[in-house]
Amino acid sequence: MDSFLITGGRPLRGSVRINGAKNACLPLMACALLTDKPVTLTNVPNLADIRNMQRLLDSLGCSLSHAKPEAAERSDKAPDQAGSSPDALTIHAADHSKVVAHYDIVRTMRAGICVLGPLLASRGKARVSMPGGCAIGARPVDLHLRGLEALGATITLDAGYIVAEAPKGGRLKGAHIFLGGPNGSTALGTANVMSAATLAQGTTVIECAACEPEIVDVGNLLLAMGAKITGLGSPRITIEGVDALHGTPNAHPVIPDRIEAGTYLMAAAITHGDVTLENFPTDDLGAALDRLHEIGVTIDRVSPDGSTSEIRNQKSEIVRVAVARRLNPVQVVTQPHPGFPTDLQAQIMALLTLADGNAIITEKIFPDRFLHVAELQRMGANITRVGPSAMITGVRELVGAPVMASDLRASAGLVIAALAARGQTQVNRVYHLDRGYEQMEVTLQGLGAEIERVKE
Ligand SMILES: CC(=O)N[C@H]1[C@@H](OP(=O)(O)OP(=O)(O)OC[C@H]2O[C@@H](n3ccc(=O)[nH]c3=O)[C@H](O)[C@@H]2O)O[C@H](CO)[C@@H](O)[C@@H]1O
Ligand SMILES: C=C(OP(=O)(O)O)C(=O)O
Image 1 (tube, helix red, strand yellow):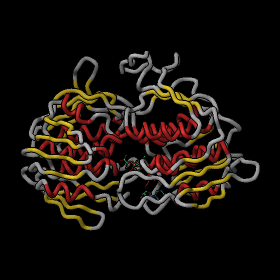
Image 2: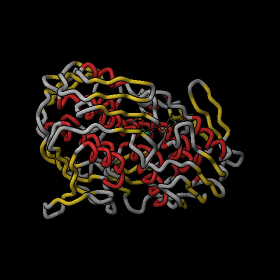
Image 3: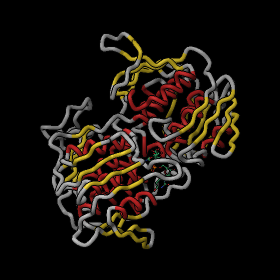
Image 4: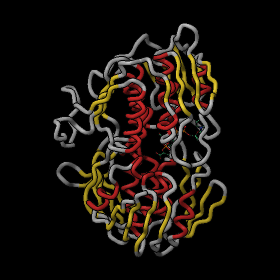
């Protein structure tokens, strides 16, 4: 398994373009199963999870191609040698006979579950393996199943597979569904139920729907495919079922990855660097920007003439991040959007290990998402975990050490810590990072970091 060797202490300087969001792109891809017409996405990130979702869709009778149609949006990325664009993806679900999402693919990522709703709605039945994903605590799928049952599906479990069948006649029926669980809304559960409801007979109302930008992006793609949806981005989404969906008249650009953007913000901050981030989704990062501001990180909007000003709420802008002094300790609570995202918890913890005082992080989405704590402690961090909270007493310096990456964002937190640590850190098992960050080591090298991938 590959690892990263990082020698810390170099301030990051330069510019990074934020890629399309993994957690939007994966459920967007699954939506292609809802129609027999081609669906084209652009700004598709080049990630292990995306390739696995391509394999899954291929196994479900879809043809996939990277050729960029005339109507597709322009992208800054260079076309590859064959004249196609690596970040454009067309998915054509022409063969609707296959309904089994196999364990060997679905176990690799949580978002594999996103094919369940579309398969059930368009093919009348589905057999989908229980999904995998990051080891960040209990990750039940009861809300997904409860929502689909409310739409009239019969669901049973068989040998690790979810077996779902639409009512007689093959069509789901609209319903009023409360989709909240003990920790609030469910992102992928909302995507699953909303996409299934687009083809149901009648009206569906989802209460306690996820407000995450990635789910809004899924809703926007469905609208472009002819669905009737209102309330996107609010806790109540209403879907008026239609008889059929069509393909995308124009290519749908995947939104920028707010978690990738937040990760590079924190990497820049911990090294007291000066980094410009392009395609930065300010609007989607309110809570994280608020915490970073309190910590003492300066984030300015860069105008086309190069001047800087206050950042504004926008879907995509250019920002410049810099830190002039020692970091302030702050309190962070992870919550559903628009609260502080759990997917940035490990990264901000790494940053706070070097703050000037006591910080506290409370994890309200995945109360056991703390596997990075022990690894940060190996690097000299002073952290005490108490139930769903971690108390962090800032230290003067971190010291490089061999550490083990346990999951995607924990790995990102360890890389951030290593960039600031004295000496060398070996971050083992970086295949987790490759699921969610496009060539992270190359991006960081471009910013002046001393980092290399060791292949094994
Ligand atoms: C691929 C993808 O997009 N993954 C993201 C998605 O995961 P995912 O969609 O799986 O996470 P959810 O939003 O569903 O989980 C939120 C909370 O609801 C609970 N829950 C969820 C489903 C369910 O059926 N029952 C239930 O109780 C979970 O245990 C958790 O406490 O949102 C998470 C929360 O923002 C992120 O950390 C993940 O990176
Ligand atoms: C937890 C994540 O991914 P997954 O839900 O696929 O495990 C993540 O993207 O941070």
